[in-house]
Image (cartoon, rainbow, N blue to C red; front, side, top):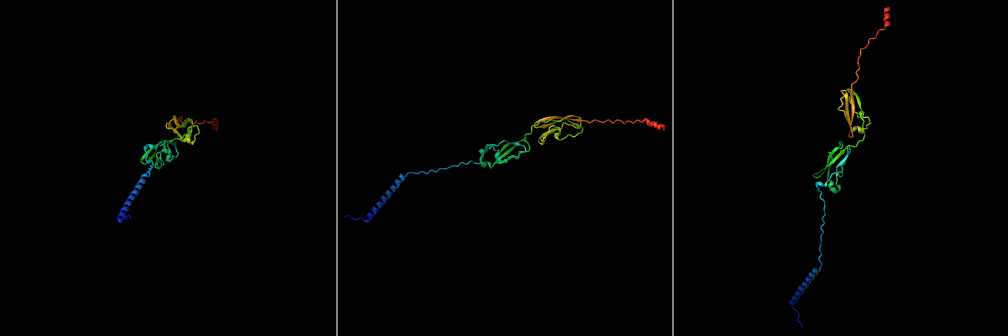
Length: 229
């Protein structure tokens, strides 16, 4: 008959069993971790490129503007940009247009500006004359008495009937005409790029000679009547 185990032996066996149990459990966990596939988490960094609202001096190109005299000019800044499709809308909103130097009432070449922050871009704005009716003029040869005043109505110097538009665009030059002295003088008319020359004659009026009045002859019959009395 076998002897029963003492308490001390039971404790030793229980501890030994617990230790080996822990060893086996730890080994199992380690094996599971070694056999488990490794999952790599890749985080994608999405970079959004945003154009900075900062442009170089050669990124804005301006148009050469042109229109007829006495017409209102555009205040829409987009009408002045040559490369509008290359410029962001937010940049266009920050542009400033200045056409104060453009005189729409007088033909000529003027400068307009567009400003972006501290940069200024210059453009050319041409105001041109309105095309005039193509008309050939015939100048009159005038005869004026010495001391006469020269007319300022252009129609008095031209044979054709003139419209108000043509009259306003004719330049009359009478500086060579001296109405205080008899003679033949030339005057000029300029219209639509053509120069015309006419003649004005200044003359002295005819002088009336004063002749002494004749004494009326007596009627001989009357004298005979007196003598008879």
